[in-house]
Image 1 (cartoon, helix red, strand yellow):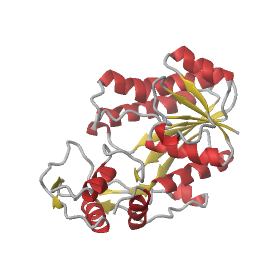
Image 2: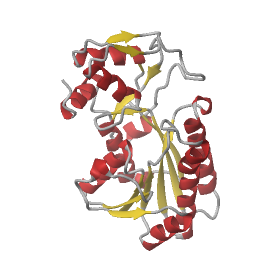
Image 3: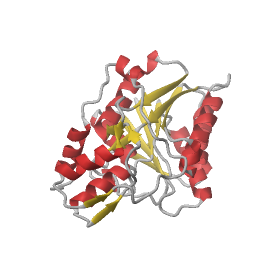
Image 4: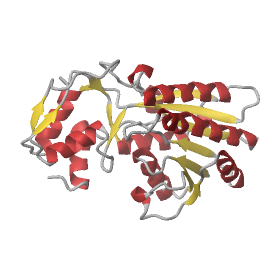
Length: 292
């Protein structure tokens, strides 16, 4: 079975690439030419397509047609990227892949890693939502050969993520004993899901793909909402930190949701359930990243 993964330089994409490589699938990676694959550089068993133009992407896919595409590439816009760059990564890139897949005229499954954030939160959330709509419309047409599985990801976390992500930023700040950690009141509730549980869910979906319709929405999370404040206080305690937690120093971002939580029933019907509690997940991050 051939699996093509986008976004393999990122937290999710690299974790998926590593797991499917361990399972002896034929794994190919589709990345930009200057992408640094440092998270998986110890493996070196992948066919890598370093593509920049639409034509290069189409040719790479045509030369080695995949059975599955796991689309984990995205741009959060946290590093000063322009709106054009965010649109290119979150919309254009995926559309080019869908078009290339459909030209193969063979059944292919496209697993889209989608956001649960509302459109008004950020350009990232808006463009991810727009691609989701485009993908569903594209793959529902009568001349489409693509099965579109939209996986709505809750707040994943784990070792190896960067500090632009809230969970890693909090844990690493506590570990460094920063004098003050500015925070909102922490009343927002999120469905925190550990990266290994996320990858397990993708594996379950692929192993059971014949059970699904041509389009499907899957919610991926623990099914339990935990307050931001509770997560921060737990991380603070488990790292033995002296950092002052300045709750209320930062206002809520505009249009931020108060509560986000998954209904993972489809995954549970496949026999999946999360193995890690939040405490266990944070403890494993501490262990694997050498935080003490």
